[in-house]
Image (cartoon, rainbow, N blue to C red; front, side, top):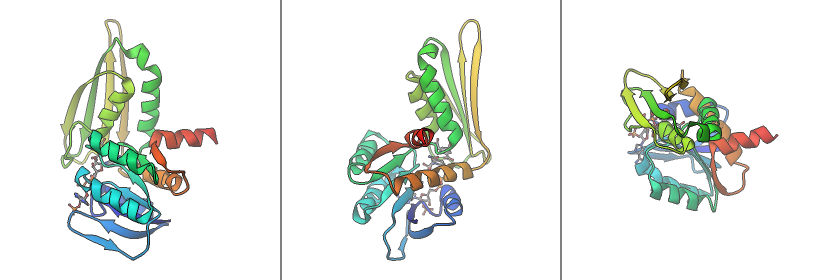
Length: 217
Ligand SMILES: NC(=O)C1=CN([C@@H]2O[C@H](COP(=O)(O)OP(=O)(O)OC[C@H]3O[C@@H](n4cnc5c(N)ncnc54)[C@H](OP(=O)(O)O)[C@@H]3O)[C@@H](O)[C@H]2O)C=CC1
Ligand SMILES: O=C(O)C1=N[C@H](C(=O)O)C[C@H](O)C1
């Protein structure tokens, strides 16, 4: 697969290049520099910053490339742009491409009604270079809960990503935790999403939907 990478010099860009070692990198875009080998990427992978989104979308339109986007901190206008792009090419978006977080998201969505009267708080811990807070994952898990949760963000050391959800009522406490031990898990998820996107019909897909397709096979 020929792929493009937006954010190639970043922490996730480095992981993507390792995970996509069997594929051909033909386009890189970073804040200051764009490089291309002159061929068209089948899929563009974006783990960068929301400021890159208009250019990323234009590149997908110009090349007819599918998009896999993990960049967090997107607003409603950004999601509208991605859904519009999904009318022409496959778009897979997730704030967390790890299998574990997406399983947790499905669990929370399935049992949210039973948890609606519990006190709910989310603690997310990330490396001290992370620019946004709360994490996109915390926002995504709160959306699965279908109710607001008190958020706590810790920024320390080189922690790749740790999310805890704690629920309490008068009689019991229920906790869930996901810990990313390596950023590689996100890159492997992005690779799975890219392999799905290169042959999918145009549309806007979440990574959960990609995984659910796998469950049906
Ligand atoms: N969905 C998921 O599973 C995951 C999502 N993320 C998200 O991915 C994003 C990147 O994380 P991380 O790699 O740690 O961040 P880094 O800061 O390490 O890397 C960001 C990259 O984006 C580039 N960049 C910044 N602005 C632009 C722009 N306007 N146009 C093009 N490129 C730009 C930077 O280029 P330069 O070096 O030149 O500044 C750099 O290569 C974050 O939003 C993070 O939350 C992270 C991990 C997993
Ligand atoms: O910035 C990171 O590192 C991560 N960001 C994503 C988020 O904001 O949820 C995903 C993961 O937790 C790592």
